[in-house]
Amino acid sequence: MPIDHDRLFKELISTFFIEFIELFIPAIALDIDRDSIQFLPEEVLSDVTAGEKKLIDLLAKVKYQEKETYFLIHVEAQSYSQQDFAKRMFKYFARLYEKYDLPIYPVVIFSFDEPLRAEPKTHSIQFPNLDVLRFEFAAIQLNKISWRDYLTQQNPVAAALMAKMNISPEERPQVKAECLRLLTTLRLDPARMQLISGFIDTYLNLNEAEEKTFKAAISTMGLEQKEKYMEIVTSWERKALEKVALNLLCEGISVDMVVKVTGLTLERVQELKAELKAENNK
Image 1 (tube, rainbow, N blue to C red):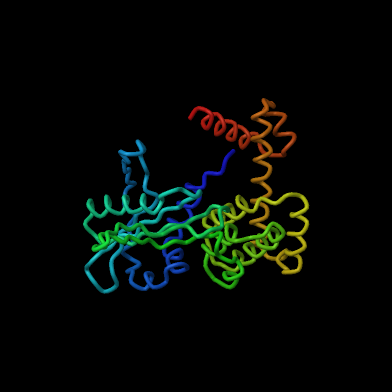
Image 2: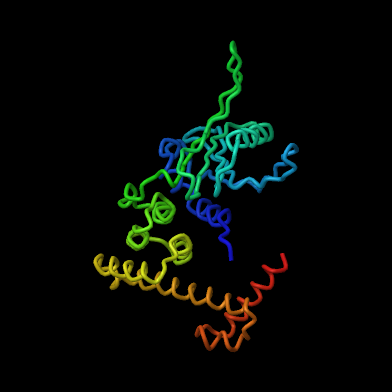
């Protein structure tokens, strides 16, 4: 099944919102009253010229520190390069500004692997004698960021997004091991730990040869004895079995046979079959 990039990034950033801001926009993090963060209802914006409707990824209303004034932080996760995207971001900005009449800090996280060129982050309108508009957003282009720069960050968003930064093919097992090492140092509840570990495993799904290199790296780090490591790896193994089960169900293999092949419980295989049916009916 294709990766739902929008859902994964929205879930990650909304769960670890202040950590995301601290990691990439620390100056803004200092301005936020952390007890005031409020995620606004989903906004559907119609693009009349393109004949499309756009669901805003994330819109948070926050209060300035020690002030009674508010501003908005608009975060878009963009999983592919798109012509005139900066212009589109300005349109989103204008419509949100018109509706809420509050200052807006726009942020885009570009998560695609290619192209490697820097994505435009400004939209301007100029005449020989007049600068009508210069709109700019904060651009976080992951394929332009070195994962090595985040190895020591005690931040769950760093542990997750290292998996989508600038990684050469031969570095994939090492990066997954480093993501896991960082994750085991964080004090997260099981649900949040599962969110991060699932994100890492989705984007660094290793082949058999890479898996051997990964295990060697893990051994060098001495992680095998850590309880958190065992919990994460067990969840990854279960997820891999569920992928096998889904593939078999897609091929029309019976539920009983899938149970025998994968070792999953009958209840879990039946749940997967129901999920697959619901997905096909969309």
